Length: 299
Image 1 (tube, one colour):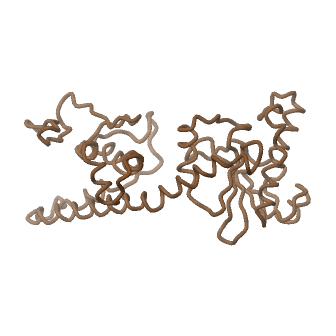
Image 2 (tube, rainbow, N blue to C red):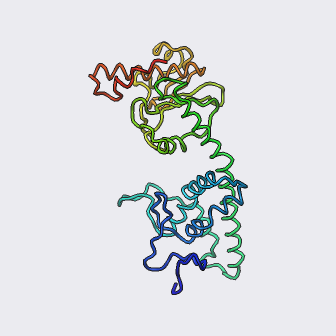
Image 3 (tube, rainbow, N blue to C red):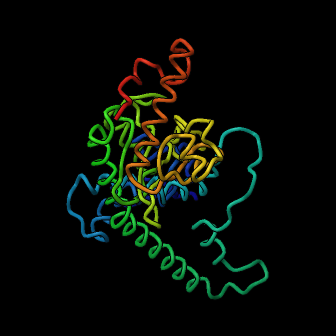
């Protein structure tokens, strides 16, 4: 690596040299590999060429998403950056990532290496196809979902006056967008209104689900779980308990429930907000959501 250097003006994109500490920016802190360096300089052009999108704002959004969801892990693996902080060993090892699959194309220690050129071209084709597929997936699925989540957040007060219930007329992948859009819009985030607490959507059978918003993306902790007395109760027994027709279930962990109709799912959301309002009022306002904020929870 005596000639290793990073000089974009001469299209040199090495990262092995002493003192190299370039990162992608935009809040990302993982040290770049050569893959990340090339993407940092040419990613937008590649995305535009593959997707056919010319809108600069959309390209900028995809540019960050592709780095976050595809390139960054290559940088991290190449530079030996731990997935998590701390000394505790991971519970399992991931060995099917792109970097590992490229590595498996290298000749084994006891194999003839005369076909190394063919192996290299195979790795290039595999990597290029995976990048292309990921960009097109983000264009065709991730971006449309983002638009739906943005619109649902904007119209949430028409669903429930608290502003804490978001409704989708059809299911979409909302979890990867909601927290990010909240940040962009600088919305209040917490365990009580006006924070967004529940999401309603139809399932594949035509029934409706009420799902609690997690504290953060990937978290199993809900901002405001469904009431404890409902948890693990199903069908008619749950309808009698809640006073809401058509109840299907509430998960034992309280993070999701179901109803036969949209109106029933919305009633479950409203009833849950009322439950916590009364609990908070009984506790003198010191319990999880504040009673003052929850007085608007009636639909």
